[in-house]
Length: 204
Image 1 (cartoon, rainbow, N blue to C red):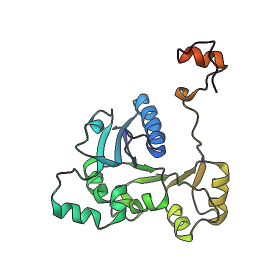
Image 2 (image 1 turned 180 degrees about the vertical axis):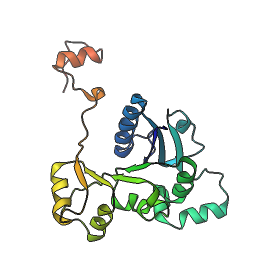
Image 3 (image 1 turned 90 degrees about the horizontal axis):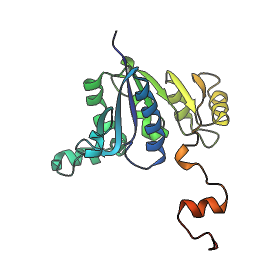
Image 4 (image 1 turned 90 degrees about the vertical axis):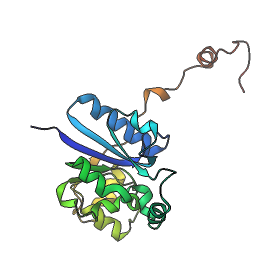
């Protein structure tokens, strides 16, 4: 039996954006389990970007290379959501055959996946950024079409459940946890030692 194939659509994980960082941590964990075949459709990264080839999972760039034909650039720039992955999503599905497509971005960055002619062939797991209430009715309708929906906070989950009258298949919140790299240093003496600063000097 083959491994489940999971495609994450986000901002390219070699970037330093919030979406990229969150997705990178998830993919790193899933990769460490050895249980899945993984792929990434990375916005703001092109297929030719060498950083994409360094990921331990398959990388598909959503951006066109700089030397792309003018006709391709014109077509790409004709639809705003192409920058988020819509331009290549169908071709990625045909190449990777995902069982599950995941996205943790805003509505306007992920709704093209619901409109895909291949939608019935994959499970769709989303985690929209709900930071206000009420949410637009169109957004609620789209979220209701997902096979699974998570949120960054319990409050956001309550908003979606209430507005959709329970039609959204909400499975819980998954707030980002603190990365060990951001562990705060303790006393000022520790900070001075870490940065090799003379202990007698004052830090203002």
